[in-house]
Image 1 (spheres, one colour):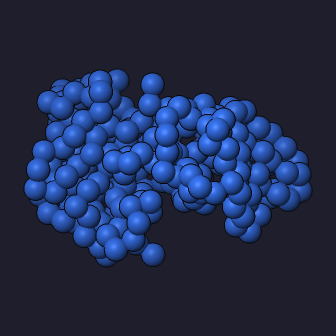
Image 2: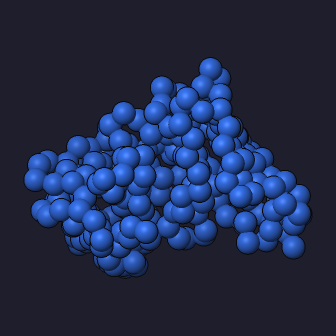
Length: 110
Length: 117
């Protein structure tokens, strides 16, 4: 299978709470990226973390990467209803290909 | 920022017909573009890498005779779904890395929803 695993597959939280999504992958990577997709729409790039980085922040987003465990996590702090979407991790191979995880569907209730 | 467009955004066709989907890079030239397919409530699956001026590279399990890819110019790649069947109904998305930036940065089109009746 191309894909890695993401968990949870679905997450429902209240506005203001934090949301944590995890991603595991199978092969060596150059970097790992997180994307957001609103229902039926295209992808929005959120954040990229390189293989030699362990943590990265962007606004309310915090990403960690553990290459020894081949895993990453995305934390969204102080969630808002507008954060409701599907979130995918994607690993970049040396060929430039992006291989996507299975995704986490996040619902933030107002 | 860089923009990638797709046309059409939505298409409905009869079984057995062929459908062409266009992917354009609007403000940069793309020697490489990627085509993905996404079934409902599933992730994106890479179908093929489109290379300007040469043959596309298909992922394992993707039929190259069914999904024809043509990258005839530096701003346009087309995906033709030949003899479409209902099981080909899906969301098709393209992406392209922008030259002059790291190929880490890929720009995605808005997607094309194909429904085959």
